[in-house]
Length: 141
Image (cartoon, rainbow, N blue to C red; front, top):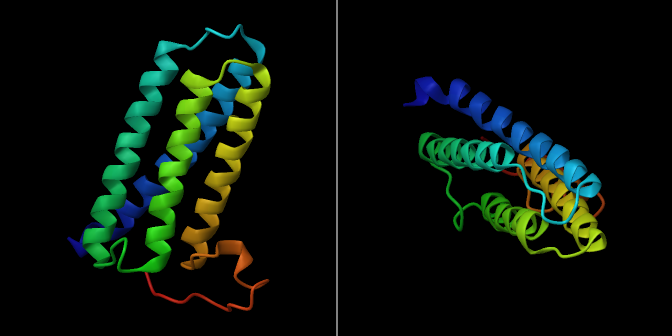
């Protein structure tokens, strides 16, 4: 399975970018449209992208033998993923005002950027690790 690592990682990274881009676009649409407007095509596209993203993540954990709750940076990514998905749900379905939509959208985008920083540094503190005194990548992968 290791021979597919590069391809699976590329799919995972592309789906992460696609998920974030789609959330950004969907948020922009929701800021301009009436409260009840949610395009079904965008909703189902997000489901598909997020499913592929999570499937690729599970494949990567199996390939590199690093798992959430064993490797701390992956645990942080998993928890942040749940926060990101929850904020997306609030944005798309639970927010009743433009202010609530904007806050959920902004926090979801910040969460996604932080997930990217954790993935890049392989450290639970992500971009904050140098500020907090942690240097370098702590685990290979």
